[in-house]
Image 1 (cartoon, one colour):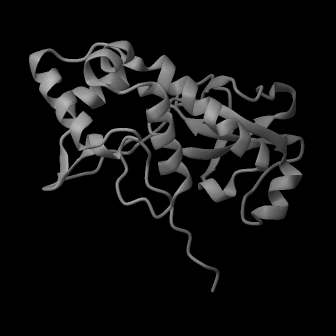
Image 2 (cartoon, rainbow, N blue to C red; image 1 turned 45 degrees about the vertical axis):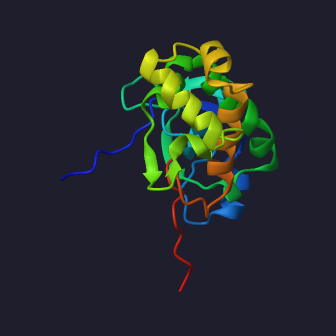
Image 3 (cartoon, one colour; image 1 turned 90 degrees about the horizontal axis):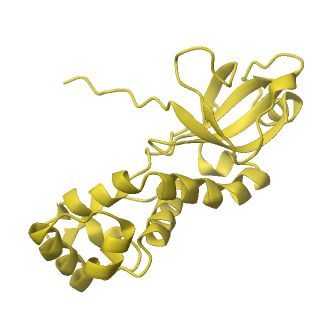
Length: 198
């Protein structure tokens, strides 16, 4: 079985800085004079990326840009995947807002998680990994979705008993992004493992 590649089509800008700052941190990355670097959060798989952009077309922090394979696109090229620890202080400060935008603007996609999630071990359901969802609320969600699938965050709040589903999802996604040791990844691509220099 061939594993499907996980490409991002859209991403949120977390930080923009001159390429010279990247050279100091990542000597093996080729950047050209006059280019700027953007740190990005992918919309579909929450992939953290660095890309090169032209100096005169720098995107604004917090904006959603097209980074897919078709042209025209907002970046010159994707330079590399990065992990949470590679993010600049500005990017880390922007991360929660970007995650919240994705969760709020893709309500149907995330509500489907509550409608379709399954157990991940014989003793634990995927729902229990969402902050604020224990066994009792997980059982309530499962029984309610069998009667009628959830249709919105508000529906989840009323029938499922989760006070703020969007906020709980944001917390879970931020944990998956920032914790390389996280065993279960419901929404975020696994971090890249860097080989230490020989």
